[in-house]
Length: 246
Image (cartoon, rainbow, N blue to C red; front, side):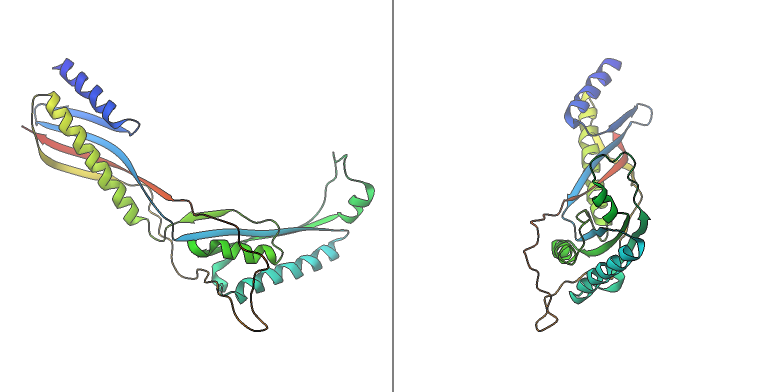
């Protein structure tokens, strides 16, 4: 019997490839217990656009004044385009003196003009389709330190469910092959549990809705947005399943 189990296990591992699984056979209860993992992917519907800027100035007052102007210009362009206030969240803002220790390339004149630096960054919640437009508007308003986009789903439960279904089907296929290796027949599912990762639900409210207005207050980008394609969202699920054999 040990030889048959070993052969069946090897066949199951060959069938499932890189997917994780644990197999147990109980002759007394006539069951096969299997832990299998699979994943599912979907196109994102939410994007978190990271935008920000950094400037240099000869003194703190000038850095703050210039930074304030750029900061408010970026925020105004976003709100003029229809981005809700709540969709924009501050990440970081910093005014500090530059440290030129170890800098052998800057001239004394360059250092004089770069004594202080001011930086600020935000995240903007938008729909996946509008992420490129949000980034484009922010960059053209002065956000010279921008670009990272995090893609996600408003509700991952459905995707996790699909991953769990695939994992259960994989477990059933392994169990069926194991049963055949033991000269038995798979009778049916006795028990199953889905070991999901931490569930994440992201609210749909306050996402950016970019619009182009007409008239003096029109928001018309000077150049076309970058060619950005959303990354698919992937979720995995691990299922523990017990099948009866006869």
